[in-house]
Image 1 (tube, helix red, strand yellow):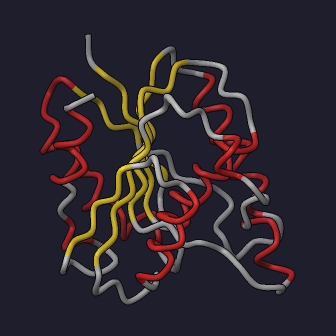
Image 2 (tube, helix red, strand yellow):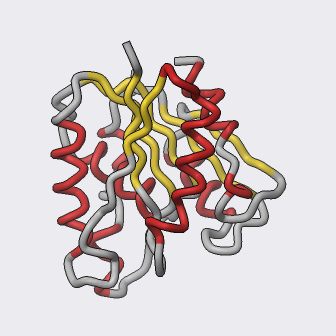
Length: 182
């Protein structure tokens, strides 16, 4: 039986299209024993109140599968973490793989729906494998966001890469290798 991976896109202008090479890389590296699902999240992040809508869509997508591996890039990765820390997952999630997630902070109105709740890490299931990936030369999400997650979730696995930028040079073979170890 094929294993199912749900990949949530990043944001930015054309985020869905920009992340397609990441998804293709992941599917290629995982091979035919896995199916990587890549739904386009709507509305785009320029719409008011997009975050609650994305979280609702994530909930529906997770509920539709019996067993699932969750992965996401950038904005999508941060919203997966928010979803998992604020909801009881109804079905079996085998692992979570977060590629370059921003650690949202600040007082601006637009950032409030994206921020994690205080003590969010305490609400994550400790038995759930959680992996973070970040390139030191990421030009979009500063590397100190990765360090903040390390401080908040010390039991997670953290993989730092020296180069690859925000798009990991469109190569998620490191993520695929961890997924295959589940």
